[in-house]
Image (cartoon, rainbow, N blue to C red; front, side, top):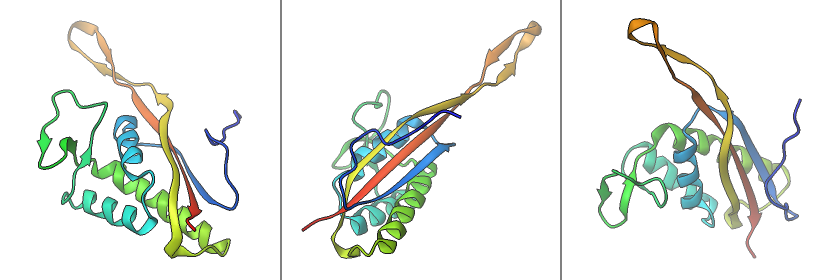
Length: 149
């Protein structure tokens, strides 16, 4: 089994959580992680809840070609599935912080990143005996929380 780890040096004391091989879009996950990085934990949870309800869009910085503009932020979207999965990981990191005895009010997202995992290969049958690839990329998400002084 291949080893995996965090993409950055982990500061102590901290709480961390890792979502491995999630069935969400890597592009959406990258944009959400960029948006929540540096936020307080309560603020980030509120932001992701609003994205799930399609009340607040996630600003897109890199994957924005042919993407509609949203009021006040420019290109943006409502990646509901990715927001739901990342919210689960965020809650897991919060529980890990509680277990370590950290103060919940002072928690800040020190590191949040997402990157491609493995690809589930698939094919889509086409006319005249041909086939088109229909691959499904999986995503790895890592979140590190630390106490702000």
